[in-house]
Length: 260
Ligand code: APR
Image (cartoon, rainbow, N blue to C red):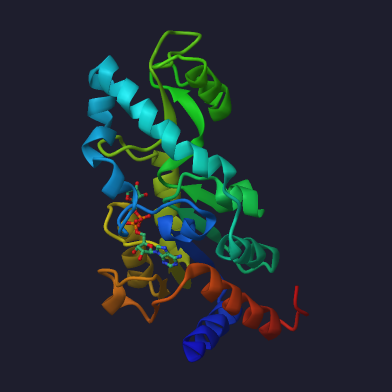
């Protein structure tokens, strides 16, 4: 694995535009379960209950959604960035990060220190809540406080519309600006690094293909195999935190920068 890590560090040092593409496997070392590993979210909850159509269909399904969303929010709120997030933030500090495209909704790239404009949240964020009717935005903790005080289904103060965490659920349309931006950045980078994703959910999972088709080198750092492994220039089946920390040690060396 050391040879692979050295090679990726060299590619990063030589690259002009590095895009990092993250999935839930980036955050498991921060205590947030991923979706498809054993014991993950889809072992605990039925994905059907998270469909957008179901959410808007009835008060009862909104109540069930908010119960589950509250359970999932607690570990996210307490979570701290792990060495993988810190390595991606350091890539930006070293001037080696074009952007990080994330499928995650946990806000850990912001907490790790990446700048807002470098983070593309393809599946939205659990850190705030929006009204599905008038789009008014609320801080997530403000709404969780209402839930804790006994409100089972929160509605908008302004228009009475249903409130939902600002995440993109199955069946909900993707955020236009973020999706376009992610396609554009994926097609114009020269190094695309996937970290901690099973690459099974479209359209997010097509980004590595877009990058590869436009001439970028593709690196996949993931504990388990993905459908894109054969397409990749390098596949490292390892832990995100350990692998990314080792890569950054070598990138710093390659750039002649002393250790942290
Ligand atoms: N280090 C490296 N890889 C890891 C680690 C880790 N510490 N922990 C988990 N993984 C890998 C797993 O092997 C798995 O292949 O991360 C991957 C996580 O895959 P998923 O659970 O499918 O998560 P993700 O790819 O982000 O799912 C995409 O599906 O349900 C939707 O909206 C949800 O954004 C999510 C989307």
